[in-house]
Length: 384
Image (tube, rainbow, N blue to C red; front, side, top):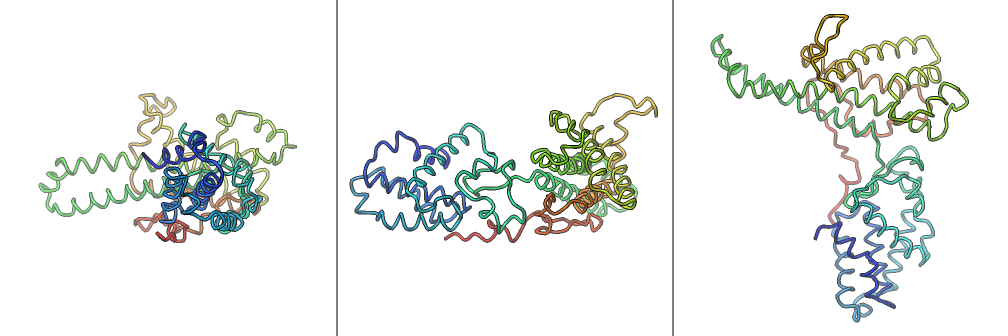
């Protein structure tokens, strides 16, 4: 039985009905201790294994539960932990009952394929501002989505960070294959040997991989910028920012799936956050370059035989012209435009609270860029 199924069994009403009196109370505390460790990101510690085994032992032998385990000790430890991590009403027995039911409900949601809940759902049990204070520079708001991960804890989802990871990883993969190709090519000196390499299955295999990864990189560039802009829009709309502006108000009324990057930049970013001609020019220069990248991306994700009649060219020519230099330039643009917009925003609207925790990308160095945060809770988590 996997972890999720085990936890579902342990929290089922039918399982709980096997117990009564003090064993039932002990059992609830052991399950809430398990839930606490999950929420706190401590599931991968040995103490969590012990919590689950205690719960199983109480179910197996409820008659001896009170002799084997101390209810006052359980209460003391659990309520201390709830206070420590800013749960609401941490000293109340009713809170333990509520958390048991809350845990069961979330596990059932996971079983059905749901894993994200809005911040407002977890605010029912915990002060999110206090809980995430040490790891997130800005408050987690009620409209933000949180991933309930039974192995890693509560993880606020950050759309642009997910797509940033795609961008960096696609670059790393491309660079690895490109360097492999260059190394193999250099081993073949002389005209005939070079021709043999280009015709070889190994050479062609890597060349095809590079072609695929270059297109993947272009797609990742645009997706990163769009995810940043759309998350800004989602936040602005959620708090009804600038709603008195008719153009913005009309934008808020649209289905979010119909919003594009141009809407956000031209209707909100430029008129509301750009106050100097210098910034206006920089924004337009960056965005003009981004639009060219986006046109290439569109030719990739909508690969067709259609013709650009104004130029009498196939749209596919756009992505056949991609090379590593162009990928580098496109990735640099995607980073620059996002960082520039971020620099225009007041502190309360900024998104990139995670940026300084990772290596600053410099694609011109042509080396692998790390996407791992050495200071994360998971990096520091001991086994004990």
